[in-house]
Image 1: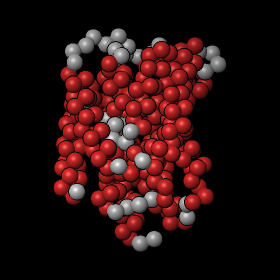
Image 2: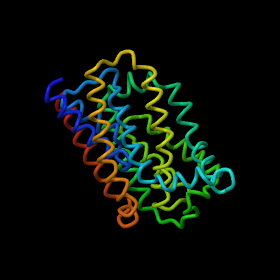
Image 3: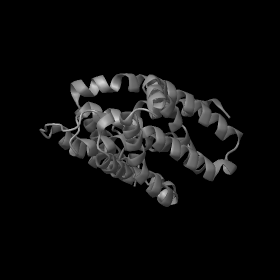
Length: 268
Protein backbone atom coordinates (compact mmCIF):
# COMPACT_ATOMS: atom_id res chain seq x y z
CA UNK A 1 0.00 0.00 0.00
CA UNK A 2 1.35 3.45 -0.91
CA UNK A 3 0.94 6.89 0.67
CA UNK A 4 -1.72 7.92 -1.84
CA UNK A 5 -3.97 5.01 -0.86
CA UNK A 6 -3.58 5.88 2.82
CA UNK A 7 -4.45 9.52 2.08
CA UNK A 8 -7.51 8.49 0.04
CA UNK A 9 -8.71 6.21 2.85
CA UNK A 10 -8.31 9.06 5.36
CA UNK A 11 -10.22 11.52 3.17
CA UNK A 12 -13.03 9.07 2.46
CA UNK A 13 -13.29 8.10 6.14
CA UNK A 14 -13.54 11.79 7.02
CA UNK A 15 -16.31 12.28 4.45
CA UNK A 16 -18.20 9.24 5.78
CA UNK A 17 -18.10 10.44 9.38
CA UNK A 18 -19.07 14.02 8.54
CA UNK A 19 -21.97 13.08 6.27
CA UNK A 20 -23.45 9.85 7.69
CA UNK A 21 -25.84 11.46 10.15
CA UNK A 22 -26.72 14.63 8.26
CA UNK A 23 -29.28 14.37 5.44
CA UNK A 24 -26.86 14.75 2.52
CA UNK A 25 -26.12 11.08 1.66
CA UNK A 26 -22.79 9.80 2.91
CA UNK A 27 -22.81 6.99 0.32
CA UNK A 28 -23.43 9.46 -2.49
CA UNK A 29 -20.58 11.68 -1.34
CA UNK A 30 -18.28 8.69 -0.86
CA UNK A 31 -18.96 7.29 -4.32
CA UNK A 32 -18.55 10.67 -6.03
CA UNK A 33 -15.33 11.38 -4.11
CA UNK A 34 -14.03 7.91 -4.96
CA UNK A 35 -14.82 8.54 -8.62
CA UNK A 36 -12.96 11.87 -8.59
CA UNK A 37 -9.90 10.39 -6.86
CA UNK A 38 -9.89 7.22 -8.91
CA UNK A 39 -10.28 5.15 -5.74
CA UNK A 40 -11.62 1.64 -6.31
CA UNK A 41 -12.43 -0.81 -3.53
CA UNK A 42 -13.04 -4.52 -3.94
CA UNK A 43 -16.77 -4.96 -4.69
CA UNK A 44 -17.39 -1.48 -3.23
CA UNK A 45 -16.90 -2.95 0.24
CA UNK A 46 -14.90 -0.02 1.61
CA UNK A 47 -17.83 2.39 1.29
CA UNK A 48 -20.12 0.04 3.22
CA UNK A 49 -17.79 -1.36 5.86
CA UNK A 50 -16.40 1.95 7.14
CA UNK A 51 -19.96 2.98 8.06
CA UNK A 52 -19.64 0.86 11.19
CA UNK A 53 -17.12 3.41 12.47
CA UNK A 54 -19.87 6.03 12.38
CA UNK A 55 -22.22 3.64 14.18
CA UNK A 56 -19.69 3.22 16.98
CA UNK A 57 -19.63 7.01 17.35
CA UNK A 58 -23.37 6.95 18.06
CA UNK A 59 -22.91 4.07 20.48
CA UNK A 60 -20.26 5.99 22.40
CA UNK A 61 -22.26 9.23 22.58
CA UNK A 62 -25.49 7.46 23.59
CA UNK A 63 -23.88 4.79 25.73
CA UNK A 64 -25.60 6.02 28.89
CA UNK A 65 -29.03 5.94 27.28
CA UNK A 66 -28.39 2.54 25.70
CA UNK A 67 -27.20 1.14 29.03
CA UNK A 68 -30.33 2.49 30.73
CA UNK A 69 -32.50 0.80 28.08
CA UNK A 70 -30.68 -2.50 28.56
CA UNK A 71 -30.94 -2.39 32.36
CA UNK A 72 -34.62 -1.38 32.42
CA UNK A 73 -35.73 -3.63 29.55
CA UNK A 74 -37.18 -6.41 31.78
CA UNK A 75 -39.14 -4.00 33.97
CA UNK A 76 -39.98 -0.95 31.84
CA UNK A 77 -42.78 -1.05 29.24
CA UNK A 78 -41.45 2.26 27.90
CA UNK A 79 -38.00 0.80 27.22
CA UNK A 80 -39.47 -2.31 25.59
CA UNK A 81 -41.73 -0.16 23.42
CA UNK A 82 -38.82 1.98 22.22
CA UNK A 83 -36.58 -0.97 21.35
CA UNK A 84 -39.45 -2.70 19.57
CA UNK A 85 -40.11 0.51 17.65
CA UNK A 86 -36.51 0.63 16.42
CA UNK A 87 -36.65 -3.03 15.36
CA UNK A 88 -39.97 -2.48 13.54
CA UNK A 89 -38.48 0.52 11.71
CA UNK A 90 -35.41 -1.53 10.78
CA UNK A 91 -37.39 -4.44 9.32
CA UNK A 92 -38.29 -3.00 5.86
CA UNK A 93 -34.67 -2.10 5.07
CA UNK A 94 -33.46 -5.49 6.29
CA UNK A 95 -35.79 -7.38 3.95
CA UNK A 96 -35.59 -5.14 0.88
CA UNK A 97 -31.86 -4.54 1.31
CA UNK A 98 -31.11 -8.27 1.37
CA UNK A 99 -33.27 -8.93 -1.69
CA UNK A 100 -31.90 -6.01 -3.74
CA UNK A 101 -28.28 -6.10 -2.52
CA UNK A 102 -26.67 -7.21 -5.80
CA UNK A 103 -28.62 -4.67 -7.88
CA UNK A 104 -27.79 -1.83 -5.48
CA UNK A 105 -24.06 -2.62 -5.34
CA UNK A 106 -23.64 -3.73 -8.95
CA UNK A 107 -25.78 -1.14 -10.76
CA UNK A 108 -26.78 1.87 -8.65
CA UNK A 109 -23.35 2.21 -6.96
CA UNK A 110 -21.75 2.29 -10.41
CA UNK A 111 -23.96 5.05 -11.87
CA UNK A 112 -22.74 8.55 -10.86
CA UNK A 113 -25.61 10.31 -12.67
CA UNK A 114 -28.15 8.50 -10.49
CA UNK A 115 -26.30 9.71 -7.41
CA UNK A 116 -26.19 13.34 -8.57
CA UNK A 117 -29.86 13.41 -9.57
CA UNK A 118 -30.83 11.84 -6.23
CA UNK A 119 -28.78 14.47 -4.39
CA UNK A 120 -30.47 17.28 -6.30
CA UNK A 121 -34.05 16.00 -6.05
CA UNK A 122 -33.59 15.00 -2.41
CA UNK A 123 -32.31 18.48 -1.62
CA UNK A 124 -35.35 20.11 -3.21
CA UNK A 125 -37.69 17.74 -1.35
CA UNK A 126 -35.94 18.36 1.98
CA UNK A 127 -36.08 22.13 1.45
CA UNK A 128 -39.82 22.00 0.78
CA UNK A 129 -40.51 19.70 3.75
CA UNK A 130 -38.41 21.87 6.07
CA UNK A 131 -40.50 24.92 5.20
CA UNK A 132 -43.93 23.34 5.61
CA UNK A 133 -45.62 24.89 8.66
CA UNK A 134 -46.66 22.15 11.06
CA UNK A 135 -47.71 21.44 14.61
CA UNK A 136 -45.75 18.31 15.65
CA UNK A 137 -47.77 15.45 17.11
CA UNK A 138 -44.78 13.35 18.17
CA UNK A 139 -41.80 14.79 20.05
CA UNK A 140 -40.62 11.88 22.23
CA UNK A 141 -38.87 9.08 20.35
CA UNK A 142 -39.48 6.60 23.16
CA UNK A 143 -43.24 6.93 22.73
CA UNK A 144 -43.45 6.92 18.92
CA UNK A 145 -46.35 4.60 17.93
CA UNK A 146 -45.22 1.35 16.30
CA UNK A 147 -47.21 2.23 13.18
CA UNK A 148 -45.22 5.46 12.90
CA UNK A 149 -41.95 3.57 13.33
CA UNK A 150 -42.89 1.15 10.53
CA UNK A 151 -43.76 4.00 8.17
CA UNK A 152 -40.44 5.72 8.92
CA UNK A 153 -38.76 2.38 8.18
CA UNK A 154 -40.31 2.29 4.72
CA UNK A 155 -39.08 5.84 4.10
CA UNK A 156 -35.59 4.66 5.03
CA UNK A 157 -35.72 2.17 2.14
CA UNK A 158 -35.53 5.10 -0.29
CA UNK A 159 -31.90 5.45 0.78
CA UNK A 160 -31.03 2.27 -1.09
CA UNK A 161 -30.72 4.61 -4.06
CA UNK A 162 -27.25 6.14 -3.47
CA UNK A 163 -27.49 9.90 -3.17
CA UNK A 164 -30.89 9.79 -1.46
CA UNK A 165 -29.49 9.63 2.12
CA UNK A 166 -30.51 7.23 4.85
CA UNK A 167 -30.79 9.96 7.47
CA UNK A 168 -32.45 12.29 4.96
CA UNK A 169 -35.11 9.73 4.07
CA UNK A 170 -35.91 8.88 7.68
CA UNK A 171 -35.91 12.50 8.82
CA UNK A 172 -38.04 13.72 5.90
CA UNK A 173 -40.45 10.84 6.37
CA UNK A 174 -40.70 11.45 10.10
CA UNK A 175 -41.41 15.16 9.56
CA UNK A 176 -44.13 14.40 7.02
CA UNK A 177 -45.66 11.94 9.49
CA UNK A 178 -45.92 14.54 12.27
CA UNK A 179 -42.70 14.54 14.32
CA UNK A 180 -40.64 17.55 15.32
CA UNK A 181 -37.19 18.18 13.83
CA UNK A 182 -35.12 17.30 16.87
CA UNK A 183 -36.79 13.97 17.61
CA UNK A 184 -36.76 13.05 13.89
CA UNK A 185 -32.98 13.49 13.83
CA UNK A 186 -32.53 11.59 17.11
CA UNK A 187 -34.69 8.68 15.94
CA UNK A 188 -32.53 8.53 12.81
CA UNK A 189 -29.45 8.12 15.05
CA UNK A 190 -30.91 5.10 16.81
CA UNK A 191 -32.31 3.55 13.63
CA UNK A 192 -28.83 3.81 12.10
CA UNK A 193 -27.43 1.34 14.63
CA UNK A 194 -29.19 -1.87 13.49
CA UNK A 195 -29.44 -0.71 9.88
CA UNK A 196 -25.75 0.01 9.36
CA UNK A 197 -24.57 -2.85 11.54
CA UNK A 198 -26.77 -5.17 9.46
CA UNK A 199 -25.42 -3.75 6.19
CA UNK A 200 -21.87 -4.19 7.51
CA UNK A 201 -22.43 -7.82 8.50
CA UNK A 202 -24.27 -8.72 5.28
CA UNK A 203 -21.70 -7.09 3.00
CA UNK A 204 -18.76 -8.59 4.89
CA UNK A 205 -20.32 -12.05 4.76
CA UNK A 206 -20.78 -11.81 0.99
CA UNK A 207 -17.37 -10.36 0.16
CA UNK A 208 -14.84 -11.31 2.83
CA UNK A 209 -13.26 -14.00 0.65
CA UNK A 210 -12.37 -11.46 -2.02
CA UNK A 211 -10.67 -9.00 0.37
CA UNK A 212 -6.88 -8.90 0.67
CA UNK A 213 -4.45 -7.39 3.18
CA UNK A 214 -4.40 -3.98 1.47
CA UNK A 215 -8.21 -3.89 1.57
CA UNK A 216 -8.13 -4.64 5.29
CA UNK A 217 -5.69 -1.78 5.95
CA UNK A 218 -7.62 0.81 3.93
CA UNK A 219 -10.90 -0.25 5.55
CA UNK A 220 -9.35 0.04 9.02
CA UNK A 221 -7.99 3.53 8.27
CA UNK A 222 -11.33 4.69 6.89
CA UNK A 223 -13.16 3.07 9.80
CA UNK A 224 -11.14 4.94 12.45
CA UNK A 225 -11.42 8.27 10.64
CA UNK A 226 -15.17 7.79 10.20
CA UNK A 227 -15.52 7.12 13.94
CA UNK A 228 -13.59 10.25 14.94
CA UNK A 229 -15.33 12.63 12.54
CA UNK A 230 -18.79 11.19 13.26
CA UNK A 231 -18.25 11.89 16.98
CA UNK A 232 -18.13 15.61 16.22
CA UNK A 233 -21.33 15.48 14.16
CA UNK A 234 -23.38 13.38 16.57
CA UNK A 235 -22.48 15.62 19.51
CA UNK A 236 -23.50 18.82 17.72
CA UNK A 237 -26.21 17.94 15.18
CA UNK A 238 -29.31 18.08 17.39
CA UNK A 239 -28.51 21.58 18.64
CA UNK A 240 -27.77 22.72 15.07
CA UNK A 241 -31.03 21.30 13.72
CA UNK A 242 -33.06 22.82 16.57
CA UNK A 243 -31.65 26.24 15.68
CA UNK A 244 -31.33 26.20 11.87
CA UNK A 245 -33.52 23.33 10.65
CA UNK A 246 -32.54 21.25 7.62
CA UNK A 247 -32.39 23.98 4.96
CA UNK A 248 -28.55 24.30 5.03
CA UNK A 249 -28.23 20.59 4.23
CA UNK A 250 -30.87 20.85 1.51
CA UNK A 251 -28.98 23.66 -0.24
CA UNK A 252 -25.72 21.72 0.05
CA UNK A 253 -27.34 18.74 -1.69
CA UNK A 254 -28.71 20.95 -4.44
CA UNK A 255 -25.32 22.56 -5.07
CA UNK A 256 -23.34 19.29 -5.03
CA UNK A 257 -25.91 17.47 -7.17
CA UNK A 258 -26.06 20.30 -9.72
CA UNK A 259 -22.27 20.53 -9.98
CA UNK A 260 -22.01 16.77 -10.33
CA UNK A 261 -24.59 16.67 -13.13
CA UNK A 262 -22.80 19.50 -14.91
CA UNK A 263 -19.42 17.78 -14.67
CA UNK A 264 -20.79 14.45 -15.87
CA UNK A 265 -22.52 16.04 -18.85
CA UNK A 266 -19.36 17.96 -19.71
CA UNK A 267 -17.24 14.80 -19.56
CA UNK A 268 -19.67 13.00 -21.82
